[in-house]
Image 1: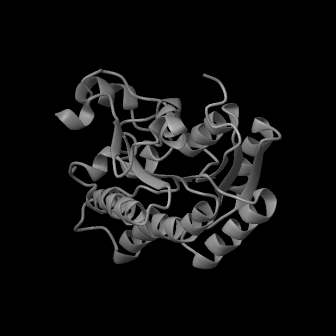
Image 2 (image 1 turned 90 degrees about the vertical axis):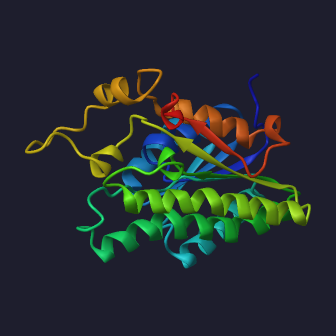
Length: 257
């Protein structure tokens, strides 16, 4: 089934590492021209070079409306259209709600919620001009169920979930051909876990995701970024043409418990 997104143009935020990188690589491998964005320029440029001619990189602070306007204008200038938006950029800040500073709460909300809002606001018009497209907003299992010491993160990912459904209905109402869905990863091996929960107290070691998964995940193992990228590819492709307002949960059964 090679070439599942042949001829499409995709924009992936937070594409310098983790899930965003895997999504960019998967979409390009299946035929899309992919614009990667991030604030980690060295890593982002390296990923784009590794992908090859189908990829390009832009510096992009997703919390800035001016930055979104500039990125979308550049996508239009280079490619003339936009078919897929993967709103992936996000941060995770763990800790007790009683100890989290208002500044950190707002910073997490700015990236995880404002960034998704701005992406939708500024990308959908370009999608509409080309006859439609697919928006994939990255939420989390934390957007489906609460977790101790993750109140701020859960708040942002729950917001993404319902924002996605509302925008999906808005687009469907005007028959613009734009589908909007959310993806909900579980325990996936990415750098975000270092700031969400951290490693063992008193050490600089990363958290033990294998042990966490064996205990909490029904399948007993952690996921990898490619597991999420495969789901994003399906939502980006015409195979999911009848899917909008849905939440694709990729978590090994974690949210079922």
